[in-house]
Image (cartoon, rainbow, N blue to C red; front, side, top):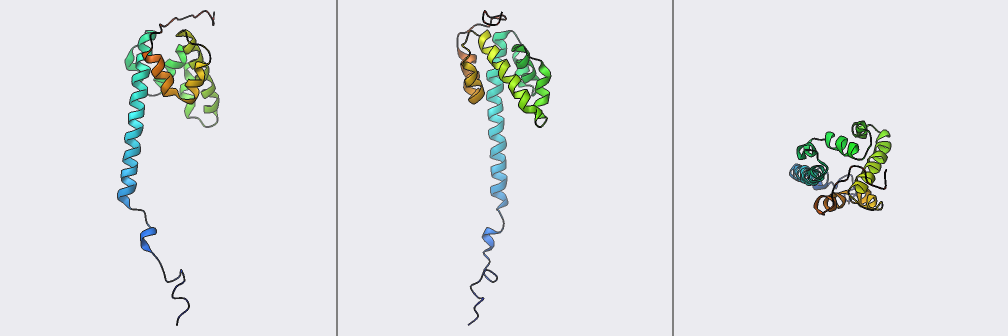
Length: 144
């Protein structure tokens, strides 16, 4: 009896060697659809916030420019939006985005701890600001 008959040299299960292209394609399409849905919700909520602040809602749908405008609402320089795609610099840009979100929260009359929502669950932060009854105040008392 051949001792190599049961070794890995002769036993090859071809079903584990290649991924099914249909599964890969469906996962890819699902990921794209999920990302588009998340972006649409983000842009819609940001548009509601822009409307409260007196900025046209349509700007919220333009990639990078919407973050630029959000930075400007929070009294930061808008060019940090472009620098979010530069490796390592994007960490610094994220800090300025968080500062902007903190100031936006203050301008809507929220407490400073609201920035924690913006950092860890930004979609909840956007939804709360978009749907609550707070009014935009360009220079809140805490920043003056």
